[in-house]
Image (cartoon, rainbow, N blue to C red; front, side, top):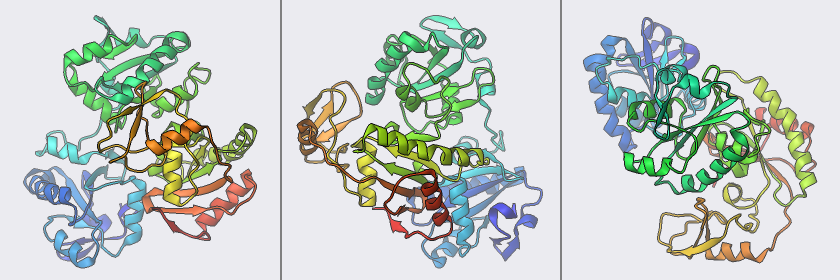
Length: 468
């Protein structure tokens, strides 16, 4: 455990040896928290109560990892906790833990076993649902275990897992809901692709509903030509969502029918890029297209190649230069995933414009959306996909086909004008967990230049800039 948490931890009596303090524990909860965080201050007393009353006796130890702003506040907050902590001054251990567990917000409660292997990333839910530890240490079931005995339906007819998946090349778990506008935009496309090509090429799809009642589920499912998890089985729905780490909908997770392992958690990107299914079962591409979604950008350092206004031939050449470097890091990846991910930005608007704005790069005029757009009531709570600014108080033009896509009045006019700006290609390394970015020197993009860029980053030879 010392390799994970450092050689020393802080207890009530001062510093203790990590391995000695955690010897014999069934599981360790790594608690990312801070005194300034209201949800943390609400959760900490409950966790302390459950720990003292039941969980400590069951074999759980907890280690607090602080995001407090100074050591005095850390000490005061840790004083309210009946467990251990990483010393406040050990910033290297905190940074390594944040990176390893991809911590993006607090409170986060990760449960690991005695060897430091993850039992569950959602320890907060586990302990709140089972405060006495009846199911401790809350080991998550595999997809194979969750799907064993699950009842599927094809409209009103019940279908067994064995029959449903026999002879299939891939299974798509489609997490969706009728109330979700992006889902209503994506479902007709997926249906078209499925009926035209994908079903014949060996793809089966299972709709996993997030609808609010069975009536809404049935109305929405009537539009779909594939299988569904029975709506009444809400427990399996929640367990599947957790096992697939679904954080929002629509989500399309591609699964291997032979062993129920996940092939690609970014199935929406995969099917959108290959609606004919030529690359089924869609193993993850080494170089992702930014237009298809953020993917792992927020979790690991990512090289983004901005080439929106380059020719198609230039884009293909530069993407090819990234590919062997990306494959090298994928091949070398351990259980925590690759050290870097690789993305190419080939179209304007959306995420491209947002990230350009965050890094101070010039933002090109937005391109016309693929569907007609119409003016809607503005209001608040929306953002422009052209300039990435808040839409509050502005004219709002929204996709008529149901896509989650909006332009403010100014960007809509620019997109309709057909104008374009020629921008130089830029290669940027984004490190969202550290809120930093690094810009490569201008020059030709080749596998060697990408490798040199990353070597300088590892050696600390690049100028660190703060994300806006």
